Each structure stands twice: as structure tokens, then as C-alpha cells.
Length: 118
Length: 108
Image 1: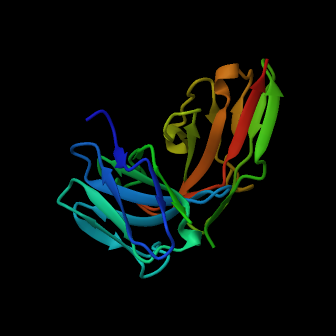
Image 2 (image 1 turned 120 degrees about the vertical axis):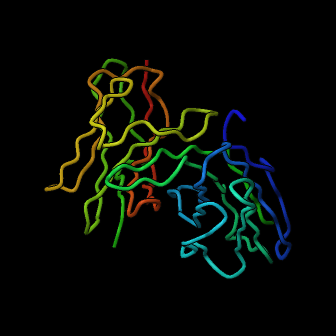
């Protein structure tokens, strides 16, 4: 594909409902990242996948948040029992690999999903 | 604690004027610093990284370890430079820490 895609672009939900956010990375990119961006704040790291393994879940804000990835393809971020503080733009990014020796691969970002919890 | 600080939320300059977007970081190891940019209605994208020592679209950024800064500079601002700019630090091979961003407005 042309780049990282995310769906839906906008999601409005009621407090207490579950939501699923989807990310399609660039084909061949082994690394995938989820970030959260609250209004007026920077990007907050949530989780990282290398292939379908998530070696670092430390950024997930609570146990209501979970994510999975199928192979080196689609990833889904699930938020259970949504709260108003979950309202934010959720960004997904992918990179070809994670580098070492001082070189870090460029992250390609999707357009984001704007989540509004009423 | 690992932190990236961008003190200015909004920076307005006139076309042709010099631009400096400030970024300070807090990190105990050897940092890898980046600038990302988001133009209106476009995605966040990499502008430059310090290890490449490159100049992109006339922008440069020098890592100053003594001052723990990575300010983004351009000698002559253009209207098309108007965008949101994020400074980011890579705390490991994959984990990025982003600043809160600075909106640059270049006035005609």
C-alpha cells in the first residue's frame, strides 16, 4: 500500500463501551508502534511490536488497553470499558526494522484515529 | 527521568526571518534525537535526525550535549514551513519520547 492506514478515522463512543482501532502497516515493516496524543500534549508511547511479539507493553495506561498483531501485518488496539480520559488521537507507526549500533529506523505514521468518549 | 521539552507552543515569524524551534531533553544515556513535522492535513513525518547531520528543506539541528539541546534552525523561513514540529528522543532501539510540539506560523 501507499502507507500506514488506520481505521476508523473517527470514532465516537459512549462511556463504558469497548472500541477497536485498527492499523495496517506498510508491507514488509516488521516494527509497529501505537501512540496516544491527547489534546495539547505530545505523543505518548503505548506499545511496540516486533513481528507479532510485543516486547514492551509498559506504555499501556491500564489493563483496559490491549493490543495484538497478526504476523507482521494488521494490529488492533482494543480499549475496554472506555472512559472520557481515553479521548485522544491514537496514532500508529511502522518501521522497516529496529536498528542498532546508533542507527534507528524511520517511523512512518498513519493518519490517526480520533476517539471521542462521551 | 527521560523527557523532551519544547517550551514554545506557538512561534510566529515573518517570511524571510530566521527560525529557531527549541528542544531540550533529559536523558542519562547517549541520546538519538529527531525532529518530526506535521503539515496541515498531512501525517506526521520525519524531518531530520541528528546522526545524519543533514539539512532538510533548509533546516538543521545540532545536538549540544552540554546544554542538552537539539534546537531546529532555518536561516530564512518560508510560508510552506508553517506546520507543527515535534522533537523526539529515542530512549532505546524502538522507544521514542516526543515533546509536546511547537506550531510554527510563517507570516507573509
